[in-house]
Length: 338
Image (cartoon, rainbow, N blue to C red; front, side, top):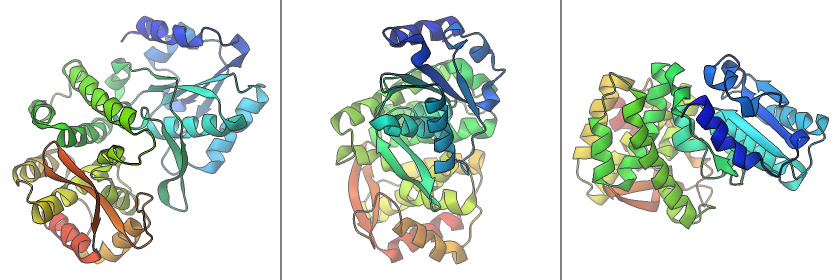
C-alpha cells in the first residue's frame, strides 16, 4: 500500500466527521517516515506524538491521550486515528473506548506484530501492577488499515517478533497456513512475499473474533502460547513475539504429553527458535517466579488456576486446559533444557 493508497483507505472513514473532530496519536519514531510524511489525509491534524515502550504502556500515558482529546474539545462523535505498534494501538484504543464513555477510533498498525495481533480484534488496554494488559476494554476499531510499506524500516528483532504471532496463527488454523509460514525465507525477510501470509493470518483472526468478540469461548484459541509467554515476557524483558514463541514451545510440550499431539510441530518450532530467536535466558531457579506470574494471568477463571490453550494437532486447538503447577514446571524445565 502506497501513501496514496493509505489516503484512499482513510478518506471514506473521515467522511461525516467534522474536520475539527479528527485527532491523531502516533509513535514519535514515525515522525520522518515516508509513509507518514506522504499521507495527505493525516496532515494538518492535531497530533500527539508519544515515545512508546512496554514500560510506559500505562495509565499515565493514557491520561496524556485523554488530556489531548479534552484540549482539542473532541466529543463522542469525534475520531481518533492511532498510528504505531501494538502498545500504541492498545493504549489509543483504550483511551478512545473510555473517553466520554466511548468514541470511534481507527488503527493504522506500523509493525508486523501490531498488524497480526494488537491492532485488530478490539482488545485494548494497559499494563498494571506489572501484569500485561490487565486493565482494558473490548472496543472494536472502526477500521484497521494495513500498509506493508511501514515494515521496510523494522529491525530484524521487530520483524521476528511479529512473525512469531504469525506462526501461532498457523498452528491454531491448520496445516496449509502452517506449511506456508514454514516455507517463508526468514533470512531475506521480504515484505512483498510476506503480504499474502499477513492477509491469511488477518483473515483467520477476523473469522475467530467475529464468532466471539469478547473471548467467552472460541476466541481463546488466539491465546495459544500466551500463558507461558506473558510470564516469560515479564521476567526476561524480551519482545512480545519472542516470549510467545517460547510460550508456544512450552505449551506444545504439554500438548504432546497431555493430549498426544504429534511431536513434529514442536520439533519444527524448536528449530526455528534455535536458528533465529535464540534460547530463552532463564533457568530452573526462575520457575517459582514464572509460576506466580502465570497464576496471576488475566485468562485464568479461578484464582489458583493456570489456564492454557493446547493443541491436539496443528489446526485443532483446545481451550480452557487447566494445568497443574507441576505440569507448568515440567514444561519450563523442557524449554530451559533446549
